[in-house]
Every structure is written in structure tokens, then in C-alpha cells.
Image (cartoon, rainbow, N blue to C red; front, side, top):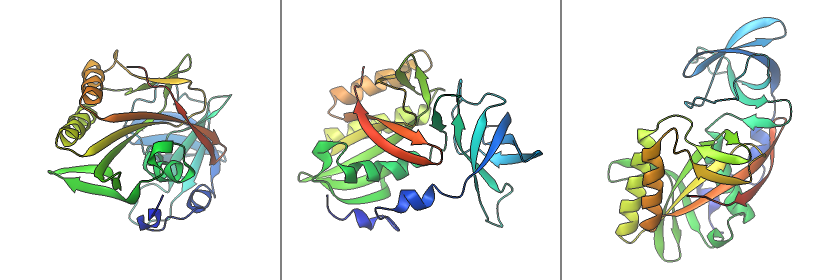
Length: 244
């Protein structure tokens, strides 16, 4: 793969640098969509939750969490919630990491057919919509969306865990680009290690499941990647089957 360095600050060690300097705490409760309360060294503190999903079965009071300190003077909270330990495995709940980890997996060759991808750029607009990534691939424009997944039931990763009109719109936009001759890809980034396959969550959002099927029929490629998450680090990634 060529020109991955076009992402500002990207290099082979960026994830190692990013995933250092954590502190442990205990999850207490979710205050609202993006705010939680945690206990750190006997003190109750508020932390930013960078994930708008419901996080079913993940955010349970009493669980150990990993928090990343932030020093921005413009912030109301000084901690970000990064991961939750469910007693067996770490679950990475910072949904921003999906976009950070996708270039890493591409550079590792986790998705073999993307090895000849070039000029990967994040957050590129097209037709009034912002896509997670744009690149050139096999003589075509390639548009990519990366979705963070934290819900796993009996080894099956499911997305979404809450209705997502935005997610449906992204799939329709990718299908539209595919119909005009571009390549399009949606990647479901399962940020925990206990999934053996992925499927759209028809129970929660049947419209998203239908949109995903239509996108595939319209030429959009779909991948699901399952990540092994350690205590403050991401250790590995592998492809898992997608069941529509």
C-alpha cells in the first residue's frame, strides 16, 4: 500500500503512542448520551463517552473501566472512557477508534484485496455528505465507511445497537456512488475479541438491515473485522464472515 502517510501524524507506531497513559476506574452510571460517572481512587468523576450507541450489556455498574486523561482547557471533563472489562475481555467503547484502526488494518494486509489501495484520505466530502475515507483502488475512486461495533450475542456481532437513520443514509449514499462507477466499502469494526461472525441487527433496525442488503446488491463491498483488545492496547485484527 502506498501513501498511507497522507493521514496527518500516521506512522506504524501511532496506535502504541495513542494507547498509553490510561488510568483505571469503576463504572457507576450513564448520565446521558455522552456522559458517564466513574469512580477513580475513591472519587466520583464525570467522563466523556465517545459513543452514541446504547452499549447494551457493556455499561454495567461495578465494571472496571479504562480512562484516558485529557488536558484541553475547553473541555468540561478531563477523562474519556476508552474501554470496559466484562470480567473476561476488554471491550473498546471509544467509537472514534474505528476510524483510527482501519488504516492500521489496511497497512497490515488484514483485507488482502486492499493492499494495492493508494492515497488514503480521511473525512472527504462528496455530494454534501462526509465519508470516513477516500482512496484510489484499481483505477477507481474508493469510498469507505467504518462502523464501530460493541454488541455481541453468542459469538455474533450485531450492528446497530440503536436505530440509526444516519447509518441507513450512509449505505444509500455508498450504493449511489457504486451505481455511478466508484468502488464503495463499509467495514464493521468489532472492537472486542469474542465475535466469530457479523450480522445486521434486524431486531433493532430492520431498515438498516434492508439497506445493507440493497447496498451489497448494488455493488457495495462489506467487511467485518474483529479486534483483540488488551488493557489499553489493540493487539490484533482478523476478518470474520458477514451474514446478511
